[in-house]
Amino acid sequence: MSVESQFQILFSLAAAGLIMGIIFDFYHVLKRFWKIKPWLQFILDFLTWVIITCLTAAGLLLINWGEVRVYVFLAIGLGVLIYYLYFSYRVKKIFLWLIKKVLTLIKLLIRIYGKIGRYAVRPLFKCIRKVLRFIFSPFNKLILRFKLKLKRKTKPLYGLLHKLLNKFNYQSRIF
Image (cartoon, rainbow, N blue to C red; front, side):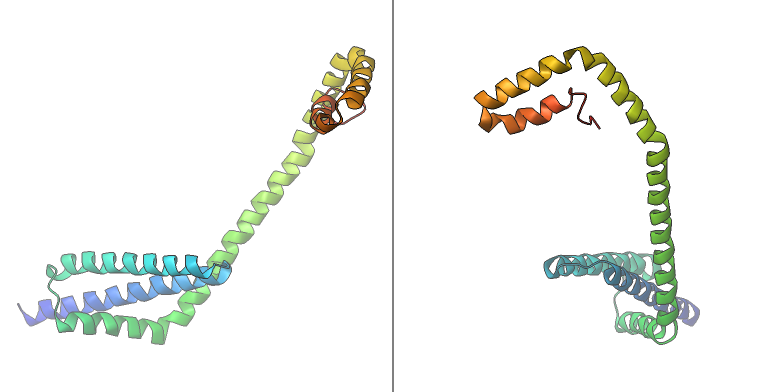
């Protein structure tokens, strides 16, 4: 193995260490935004380590055919150290900014959906309610009498049936 290829392997493994640092920081920034219970945090930490281990193993297979030597650990450790000394603060700021922008976009979409519901869907429901009131208006007195008789005879079941019958009564709201 030539010296040139050894330096390529060394720099590739240091880059793998940088990538590991980025993954750790991304995970820690996400943990800051969501309140996670301790048992779930343990599981997520374990899954993060499994992902990092799999990526490291795949990287070793691609870079130096899976040979694990002391310089492999030194190069990966050097990459992680360089990342945390020089890049971690900036990358965390970028991740925080991206997550805030994504959350702002989600809130905006929810707000737009609420406006659409208010100005487009509610009038549709009002029209449907008026049509149903018109259809069931001949039966309103009959339904009211039936409800009163039913209430007197079956008080325990009245609460359940009351909700069902109110859907057909013109005095109550359907939607």
